[in-house]
Image (cartoon, rainbow over all chains, first blue to last red):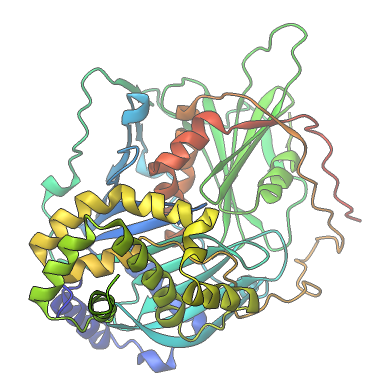
Length: 330
Length: 210
């Protein structure tokens, strides 16, 4: 009995492409190279897959479609049950459809202002994680390498990844807390790597009649949101560095926002700085925390500005970074 | 449950049942709660034994697997199992219809994938104490702030959506997919609108840094 969930011809074609470009045979790859190959596959390949997302005892099915065509990235991620939310990216346009809120959030990111790229695994990164290949196994009749990424301290999470031998696509990923417990899991039930994906695949199926549309129509400010103020973190958890900064406006707001990016090469934290709207008399600023899956957010107020840190790190880490962000150079 | 049915179920899970028999059994699965329950247990056991091959199970997990094997009600009685079953049953019906049309093999794959990891599953590569990898310029002593007592505060979910989308553009590909997936699911919808909490003591963070 065959399982129709993988189209092997696509995987085979991809494997041949890698061979042709001189990539070393799989058996010679170090664990960190598998992470790099996986990142490369996820960002440069066309794929269409359905996967289960598990978090906190709750399972939901989602579909992801990813295409790179003429240098433009298109992506659609849709919840197949539950909220029915969808995220659609076409080039620099990011749209988040929230049927449960009857809202569509649209962000247009000018390419020259965008923070591009993602963290790169370096030797220093490897000093804060124990990265190993702990075995090989068959998953969905595919040969996979099991790569574990274990944090050496409590400031970051770990991963366990089942990476396909020939395509480097992660067929299964587990996010683990600082005690090694699995807190989030994604497993592909079907995955294809088509050479062509039509534009129609990136059109949402959400009916948006009567929805409110929030856009960032105000051009991004030329300087930081804090005017002449420059924002940076006084202290950071070991291994984290600030790797990017941009000024932007967010959908539904005309206030400029500074976006600072901190990363250790695997985990990243964004800090958003925006002017705090006037508080009511006698109202003291409050700090807010939130969790989105295994990611954390923490918000506080510093020097009349709202500081919000968001990242795929433990709650205490975003809290630490947010409270260390200060203005200087008024 | 009769022995023959049990045998067929086992064979189907092991991918050893003839396609025509698979289809018949899948149809029965869609309406037989007892059979579904047994299938769920096979999925959990299979995930531990097959998908996790090469990963050592910790003793409590191994014990739980043994308990599942030895005592039928063990899994169905646990809170975690109820969560898994609730979620699995919720999407079972639409998936079942489509899967049977496309071939019953897909049912077994999808059903297995709907199961969450077993509670307590840990990385076999043990974490080691962080003793010598402090970045240059960083102090040797950090005190992670304790999570403060919290009280509920409602904040607009669209604000959180803005932050999540903007952050996703700078995350690593895997982290990005996790983050956006979590935000797409209904659980995160609840989290965004209902579980936002506010710290009572926002300024109690300490860092013992020279």
